Image 1 (cartoon, rainbow, N blue to C red):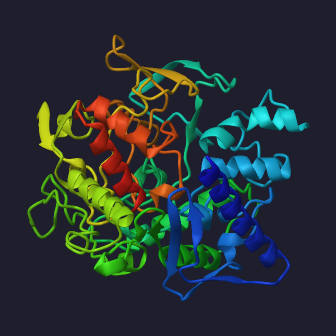
Image 2: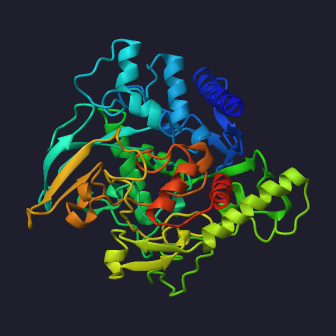
Length: 472
C-alpha cells in the first residue's frame, strides 16, 4: 500500500508540476525518455521529434470547457488515464479539473448535482473509480435490432441514444493500429472514415486519426470552431511520433539491460504492417502465423547473471513471456472468430488474438466478442447498464449486454459485444483494464481469461503472466 501511495503522489506531482510549468511559461517540453513512476516501476516515452512538445495543439484547450487532448491522455499514464490518477485529480481540485465535465465525464448528463463537492463525487464516480468516459451513440439507421429496454443505474435510460462507458485508449504507439477506437468507428465507412488496409496504410491511419482528433475536440472539448487542417495534422504528427513502454521494473530493474529489448526505444524500429502475423491467412506475404509473438527478454536474460532477487524477478518475466507465447487455449464461442471460421473450437494461444510482434494488438481489424460486455460475466459489471436488444428479423431472439460495441457502428446483430484488442505496451501505468474498466488489476484480467476459456492456470502461472505483462 505504501509503495502504491508513493507512486501515486510522485506521478501526480510530476504531472501537476509539468502542467503548471507550461502554464507559467517555465517549460515547453519534456525531455525524451522522461521517467514517470507507476505501480510497477518506471514508464518512459520516446518522441521521434527529440522532445515531447507541451505547447502544441494536443495540449491546448481548443474547445469551450477547458479540456485538451491531454485531459484524458496523460504522459504519466501511458497516454491514457489511470483511475487512480483521475481520483487524485478530483481530490486536488474538488472535482473541477477539466476532465470533470457533464457532457461525457459524468455518469449521466441529467438529474445530477454538480454544484457541491459531494454532488460531483457522485456524478463522476465511474470516472474516478473506473476511469470511464460516457459514450453516447445514436442507434444506427437500418440497424438489424431494436432496443427494447435500458436499465441504467445512473438514469440515462434513453433507448434511441445509448450511453455506454469506456476507457480512453492510449494515444501512443499508434503506428501499430489496425483500427481506431474500441468499436472501430473512426475506421469505418459508416462514419465516413477508412478501414485500415495493407495497401493503403499509413495514409488511411493518418486520415482516421485526423478525423478522430476533430471528433474528439468537437465532442469531448465541446468546440464551437472546428480544428483547422493544420491543427489536425499537428496533433496526428505528435501522436505518431510517440513510442511508450515500461522501462524499469521495480523488481527486475532496467528492462533493456544485458541486451534485453524492453522499454520504448526498440519499439521505434519494431517491424509492422497490416496483417504481419495474422492467424487466419490475411498476411499479405502469405507468411505463416507464429504464436511466438513476444521476444523482448529472450535470449538476453536466459543465462544472464544477476543478484538473486533480480534474477528471480527476471526469471518470472521470462516464464510469463513463454506462457504468453505457448500456453494452449481452447478458443470457444468467440464472436468474430469461431463463427467466422465455422470451428466450434480453435486451438490457440494468447498470440492468436494478440498477434502483432512485441506489441500485442491484432494486426488486422478483428473486432471480437469474448464476453467482456456480457451481463453474466466472470468480472463484476454490476455498475454498468443492462441494454436489451431484439433482432428485427427474428423477434424471438433477444440479448442483454452492457455495451453493444461494434454493433452501434455497423447496425449488425452479429457485431453485438465486439471490440478490438488494445496495444499491450505500457499496461502497468494505465489500470483498470478492458474497454469497461472491469478488471482493476492485471491479476483480474488473467482470472477472467482463466475462467472464460478454462485455461486451468496455476497460481504461479498467473503470477508469471502478470510479471510479464507489467514489464511491457
